[in-house]
Length: 92
Image 1 (spheres, rainbow, N blue to C red):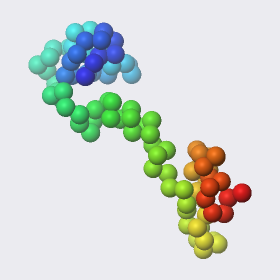
Image 2 (cartoon, helix red, strand yellow; image 1 turned 180 degrees about the horizontal axis):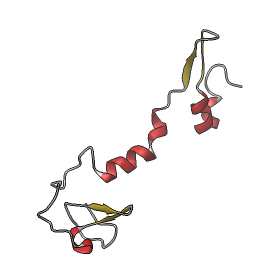
Image 3 (cartoon, rainbow, N blue to C red; image 1 turned 45 degrees about the vertical axis):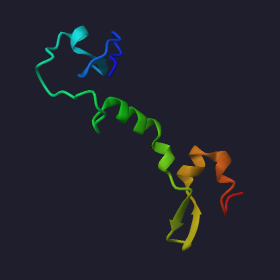
Image 4 (spheres, one colour; image 1 turned 90 degrees about the vertical axis):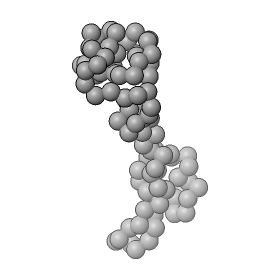
């Protein structure tokens, strides 16, 4: 991983006040605490950032309405992709 503060390559990133720091720029001992071996893990900050950035990719275009007992265009999908919602049945 690359430290955003100093730009050095490191295997451990510590978050202090919402800013990522490595052992060189924050004074943290490299031997202390939990480490990663440079591999992507589920707790990796990059993976978290990417999942937040792309969370809208998993919004389905249709939603079942229990009141009308029909499939309708999902309002969250319509809000996120207004130009694409017109391609789906029921949207004008």
